[in-house]
Each structure stands twice: as structure tokens, then as C-alpha cells.
Amino acid sequence: MPKLLTIAVDFDGTLVENRYPEIGKPILFAFETLKKLQQEGHQLILWTYRSGVKLEEAVAFCESKGIEFYAVNRSYPEEEYENGISRKILADLFIDDRNINGLPPWGEVYHQLTNSRPEAPALPQKKKRLLNIFKKL
Image (cartoon, one colour):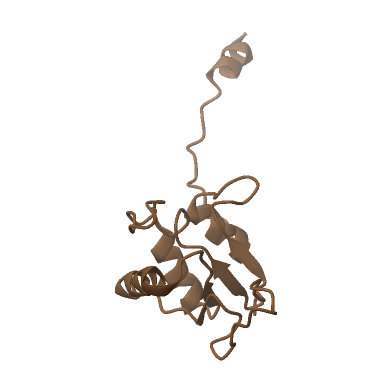
């Protein structure tokens, strides 16, 4: 059985187009990928700059797309944020549009996390006509 991961995911620019403080359009395959990862048992944490009402709007938007997070802006649901404690959360990995190489397409994110690759269609065999000409000589 593959290792189950705790995955922290950004919102603006990662799940939706960056239109902060508004909510942008969903990024292609973002929510479908998260649903698949949740179905496989991975825990998802929403880790975003948003707070207050804007955070509540983002969480509600994700819920409307079928995603319920294990925790929001914290390592686990019961964690209490205190000023003397770092806001960095405990996760196995972070998915964010601010990565060094940017955000890869969500299909690629899924395949990287699951170490799977889609099956390539079988290509038809080409006939070696040029070689046949030489055989006749």
C-alpha cells in the first residue's frame, strides 16, 4: 500500500486563478485531482494567505466543489494558533503556485504523487518499405 500523505494546498493561484480578494475560476483538474487524492486516503490541508471572511469564502467554495479539508491553516483541526508559535504547518508536501518552477499541470501533480504514468496508446507498426526494395535486388 502506498504511503498516505498529508498535503498542504494553497488556494489563490493554485486551486483557482489568482483574483484575490475575489475567487477566481477553478484551475483545470485541480478539484478533480484533490478528490482523487482524498479517495485514496491522503489528508488535505488548505494553507492560504486568506483569513477571516475571505478564508471562509474559500473554504465554502472548495466544499461546493466536493472538497472538505482535514484542517485549514493549521497542522491538525484542534491546533490553536498562538503569536509565539510559527505559522508553518506540518505536512509531507506543499502544492503552491509559488514553487521555484511554478505549478505544474494538475494531472502531472497527481502522477508525481502516485508514481503512476498514464498508459501510452500503442502506435501502429510502420512497414519497412525501403528495406523491401533492397531485398528484391
